Amino acid sequence: ETGVTQSPTHLIKTRGQQVTLRCSSQSGHNTVSWYQQALGQGPQFIFQYYREEENGRGNFPPRFSGLQFPNYSSELNVNALELDDSALYLCASSWGGPQTYNEQFFGPGTRLTVL
Amino acid sequence: DAKTTQPNSMESNEEEPVHLPCNHSTISGTDYIHWYRQLPSQGPEYVIHGLTSNVNNRMASLAIAEDRKSSTLILHRATLRDAAVYYCILRDPGTASKLTFGTGTRLQVTL
Picture (cartoon, one colour):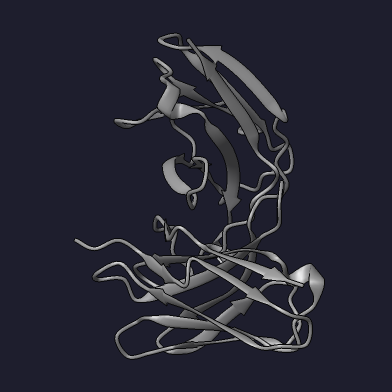
């Protein structure tokens, strides 16, 4: 059984650029959630994808967007990068979609630095 | 989202039990109590969850107060590998799929 994988591991961008982060779900999982973790803070929920549609969003602006593919993998896109976007971006997969309490399995994260 | 309050940090000696407290005085009757932990340089991982009754699994035990306004995660014999940030999270039916993390408790384990 393959766990959640994320790519790239690290990324450096400059202000105003765009970035795409990728996540492969654990085998059998149909739901993907994305979180942002600033240094010294707990992860903050960005949004969740289920059945290829966004289902629930945290307090993040529209320049944060995502996709889920038929194989349940997912992308997080961030446009017009700002310095405050520097953080660890975590992807978590689970089974069952919204309204479930199922365990979420996290990947190791992508460390994004915006200069 | 109902809030949780945890101490910022705790220390323990290896091989000794650790009791990590969490206060959640505004918990609703349908909120589940979940615990996740985050080891250094890793994503969070699930530890345990419960609703009303105490729960045990291979990693830990969860003791829930009778009024459900507090809970305690119990590591029976701490090891160096248990050094992590531990998060207590409430999950309600409306937003069950979303995890709302606080700042957690950083557990240090020493020899």
